[in-house]
Amino acid sequence: MSEEAQIEVDVLVEAGPWPALPGADDLVARAVKAACAGALTEYEMDIDGAEIAVKLTDDATIRALNRDWRGKDSATNVLSFPTPEVARAGGDPHLGDIAIAYETLAREAEAEGKPFADHLAHLAVHGTLHLLGYDHETVEEAEEMEAMERRVLAGLAIPDPYAETEPVLHP
Image 1 (cartoon, rainbow, N blue to C red):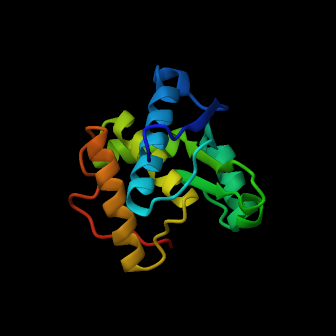
Image 2: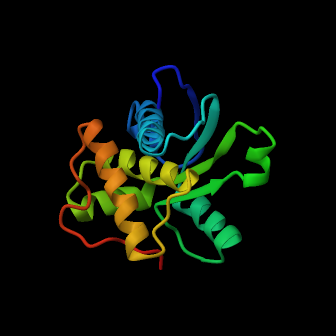
Image 3: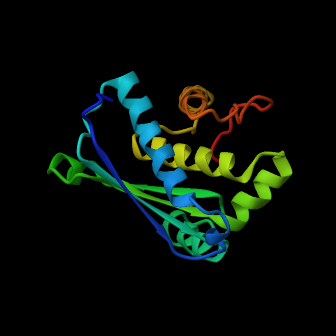
């Protein structure tokens, strides 16, 4: 991403105990912008002036979103909703929306021995990369996406979240 490129990130604290992490909205905005910068550096995308909305929410809300939009009646850590290509082609600067669930994030961070803030930044990066077209349906896609996540997170001084795992495929 060129130094002049600007990405607007709107972070909404909707539900859950997010106020317990002061600065969560700033951390998420930095992570989203870093993911955009990483993808732009690699693929020379032009998303100057783009907008991304992030909803910090709870398991109940993300479960409903997951059920209604993906047909999966369970909570998950992060969901991404890219703006359709036809809208982007028509000049819509909104790249899409991301939702992150507090309780699932907290359980995963504790189970994996990761700082909550690091895992939050990772999920924000992961969700942003989905908005930019990355996926992990195949091993090759997962390896490419995880490599980008590693580079972006390293730039944020966050340790490699995949150091001891295999590529994660969509279930």
